[in-house]
Every structure is written in C-alpha cells, then in structure tokens.
Image: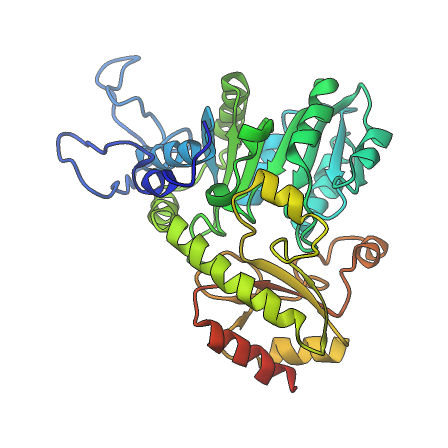
Length: 385
C-alpha cells in the first residue's frame, strides 16, 4: 500500500526492515563491498546472494526501502535513472506502440529516439495532460503510456487515474516518472499506475553526490522479468552508491518539506518581479494542473521553471548567481539553476521545444535548503535589477 503522510518518515528510516547481519545488529546497513559470495555446498550458499551483479545485501536493503515508500511489490535499483528507463523498454518488442508525454526530460526523449525507434518501437509524443490527445493515438497495439507529472521542465500535470484507465482498457501499462515529487509527495501505484520510475540521483539521495535509478512495480511477474534483464545487462546499482542513497532517504521527508516551503515562497515572489514574465509551479494559484495535482499528490514539490523578459537576462542570472549553482540535475540540498534549452533538453527537436515554451528565456530552478532571503537576494543581484 502507498505511504500515508503520517508514516512515511518512519518508512524512510526503517522501510528496509530490521538489520541483523550475523547477529551484529548494526544501526546503518553495512556496505557489502564484494563481487562474490562463497557457497556452503553445490546449489546452496546460505545467504541467498551469489554475485553482486545479480544482487547484493546493501542494494537489496535499499530496494526494500524504496518499495515500501512507493507501496510496490518490488523495486529494483540501477546505476542511473536512464539505465532504469532503458531496462524497462527492453520488455517491449519491435512494432509495439508507446505513447509518451511531449514534455519529458531530454534524456528520455533521446533514448526513445536513438534506441527505442532503432529497436522497432513506434512512439507517439502527445500532450498527455489532455486525455483527448491520448485517445486520438491509442490503439490495440499500444503497450505503454509513459508520463511525467509534474513534467520536466514545464510542470504540466497529468491525471494519473485517467491515464491508468485509458492504458488498461487496451491492456497497456501506465508508467509514471515520479522523480519530481518523490514517494514523499506522490504514490502513482496507488492511483492505478503499473510502473514507477525514479532518478534516485535527485530527491531520494538528496545530496548531489551519487547517481542511481529505480523501477518500482506492482506486479511480481513483471518484477521477475525486469530482474532477469538487470542480471543479464549488468546495470544494478553498486553497493557504495546504494549505501549513499539509503543514507539520503533517511532525511527525505524533512528535506522535501523544507524545500517545498522555500519553493512556495519563492514561486510567489518570482511572480511579483517585473522581469519575470511567467512562473510554472503546481502550487501556485492559477496553475492549470493545480486541482489535479492536489487530488493525486500530497504536495507541489520544489521544482520551479520561470520565464524572464530576455535571453540576455537569463544568461545574466545564470552567470551571476553566487549561492544558487548553475548546474544540471536537481533535488539536492543545494539550490541549482538550469538552462533547459542547452542543458537538459538540448536533444529535444527545436520545433517541439518552441511549442512547449522551452526557449532561451526559460530557467529551471531546483530549490534547496538555503535561507529563503539569501535565495531571493541572489536572484535579484544576479539579474541586474
């Protein structure tokens, strides 16, 4: 079952279960930095672990934690979010039809184009926040609907329940990238989704110090197929990185609350500035998806995109910030500002970027834990206003 707001902080700390390694009972799950595990006799090793490419105690403990947070039957940890997405798409066959949101992380767009289409997948990118657009392209050969909500970077909100119904009517999977809100604010499986994707490098780890990804599933048979693929491809998360993510998850709740608190105030403040022409944040009054987000999530998160009055102003802010860091990625304790046009979404076709509003005036802000006044002053000073 999905996490409730009142117990998720406990699951962040204890979701993997009681730790007991050979009676030592450590508080923190140890790093099992080993490639292989010895056997007692043929066909029996006593621990359930053979080779770290397939499974490892540190990684397994993290996977149990993430599964608990998402209310999943199983969760699998990967070397990156893109490794997770790529493995998921290996379950499909040439000729299968995939519907995806037209506003996706640029790396996902690149993967679908360079690898998915090469492998024979037929991909339709539509405005999934409008169910009528999905209905126009869905067919008996559709095998998955793939969405982000909120989307990256335009913060579109898609109704998970509606998408699940549309997918299941034709026997397709609903896949939800839940990176922006994390399990703390949203649990798509409880809303009808079949698969949840996370870039664990972001809010789950929370410290901009490791790369990881996750697939969470509600069906054990699908989990078995994915685990076999992971074992075969060899893209399971390394023990040390698993330990870093596990450590980060312990503070997920307190980080998400404080970051959201900062983001709500910052989004409202940005909306009042003369040189800011538009603010995209699901928690703002007037955001097109605010009501749907409130009906399916427990918060609006801490990701903001905003459009300024000129490309010169955008560049000035990027180059002038002193506390906020001009860098790719998101979700860490440090505030990061990104230029989607040439960073995260450079591989999105230019006409698609223009249609979505990903222009040379758009900035994406991942709000961290810094003092809110310092963040405001940093933006004002950098803007030259």
